[in-house]
Length: 335
Length: 293
Image (cartoon, rainbow over all chains, first blue to last red; front, side):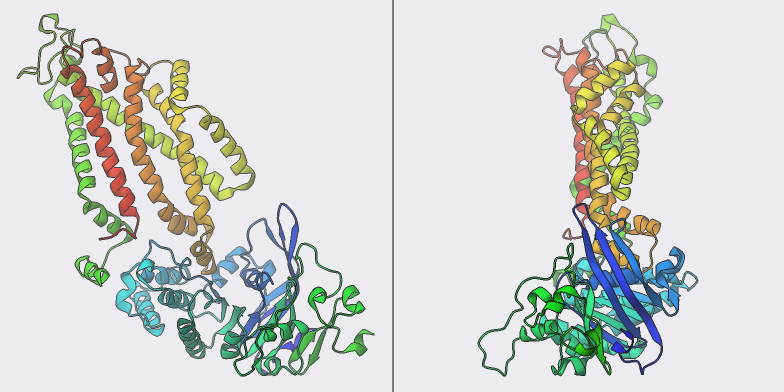
């Protein structure tokens, strides 16, 4: 179903999410945030998770770290395996040592993800304090200086507070915090959304550079197809808590075979070369996650919707490295 | 540019608390408050060295209504008691009773508000509904009711006032923990592998303690007034035990002819409250890292 959806020829799998179901139990209703979400990340791979707001991208990242909101967020079924370790049943102590050293996360808004009353140097140092209690103070300071110069912040400014930095610089500091313990996997949750375009390009360039230096696998969560094309090797399109299309950036962006939703996303991009006066938006809204349809969750908005789409969940159909979850493809298997 | 200049004058190696202290020291009004309060505390604490406690209640009817002079710096009241001794020893109750009240209310309020904010859910509901019940009664009235029930006495007064102030502390603490718990940097700290205890100690408390300390300081001023008001009404501290409010109450009939009997203890109350409020305002500014200078 999912196996060859991403490049299998690379080294072993670092992270494997299989058929993950996550729901949020709120007072009014049960929100089905992830519905059979599957994803494989290899060592050193840069994979983009694309989808609109509420599709479950961030929920996926939080599930990996087991940081879903207490009492509300609940993983109902599925598995997350990291480097052979079952994360859903791992003891809390293991999770604490995993966060920061093996898997790090960068948040969307650099303005609020730094503690306003601790100097940036101390905040970066704290990550080392947590994970390397035996390291000497000088060694830690040295590593903080190194990582700061690496992300382009003069180490002399490490005694300043977050409010003394601009947004782009704060995001660099956040990246420095995420990378100081040299994690194997970086979950970047819309790291450039809050930044303007020029800074966005700088940050992506920086992340590319750092990625090649540390060989960190990156899961880039975004709603911006341009960012994916620019940064990622592979892409997974998320809709209503499922990966509906995945493959290499070349295969998906070739636009030969696409899920109708991905097609819709492409149609929403302004095309500078065409003279078409308007973009073509996808009609309607995303399926209500409290009340998901029986069949394909995209059926209501799909221009190619047929009767089978209403009654049956589509399977993932795979050609080489490119997989699409839609009844339009591979009719033979379904009928 | 101005930031750079400020940076070069401020020493580079400074902890967060060092910076708060640095900013506090630069606030002249706050420092004035510290000096006034420290001076008052010193004078009151060292009282036994220069005035005997016996003079507080020693009657000397022949020397009643003496205006301030060398022997009686603050004069005497209608029973010939030395007002200076009474005001100085009265400060022990007015000032340190206020501090004791705040310490008790602060500790209990922190525990209740902290538990409600951090655990949420049912704990929050139960604790906060109890607090709401206390809040429904005006605090002065509540304190009066408690003293009436417990009877007069300094410690009973302190307990009564502390109980009436717990709700405000609990609410302030709960509110600051609730807002901080969902901050993105707390979430980020979790992602770097901090445990709950580390998050509370390093991210939630230091960020939340500022407003709590500020409201504690400002409430100290109110408590000093409350103690004096209670004393004035004859609740808590009974004559002949001196207390600033009680002293004013004792002399209220004679204030028209001998105004210093009311003015001196009144000025003490005012000075203490003012000093405390200056310190509170100074702390509030110092805790905010975005404050200029």
